[in-house]
Amino acid sequence: MAVHEDEYIQRRHVYEEYAYVLDYLPYGRGGEKSRHLAVPTAQIMGEQHFTLLEAELKLGATVSVHERIYIGRDRREKVDRIIGRIGYEQLTANAKSEVVPVIDELVKAQDRRFVDFFNNSQPVTPRMHSLELLPGIGKKSMWTIINAREKKPFTSYKDIEERTGLKDIPRIVSKRILEELSTESKYRLFTRTV
Image (tube, rainbow, N blue to C red; front, side):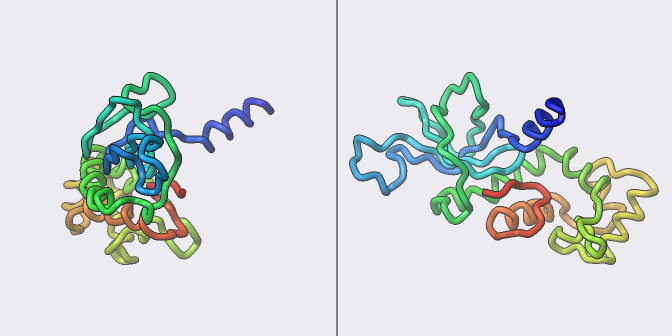
């Protein structure tokens, strides 16, 4: 029974290993009462689950926007501690402007993961398929994708586009990720809640 509990705990507590910097706040958030208490902070997005986080940086450490930093449990070079998860509305204006380019970059870099989603996605309810949660994909497009993947699994974004007639698959996935981050989405395909 303990083995099952350990598996449950491991699945439930998924931590990001790497993140991309959305904004660097050298004096922390604006709400600090005295400037000497303020510590350098970064608003970051997790690489795997697109988790929005705020991190306290080590003294003397600086980061730049779009920089990939290690945030795992050990050997952190620049991050002192993770302050916690934040919602999209808590991002600074600069961080919000960097969200879309970072998502686009990650979706292109992790193409295998998202192609696998198109190959293996399942219904979320008896009346709705997870493919229908993607922007611009309705019943007709969903059936086109399902029929094409039954003949032969997709191998790339280009393969999906050629065999289904859909355009700019990475952009469709990016829009869904942004929607999950910025709204209270009932179904989450790619992100984690706050």
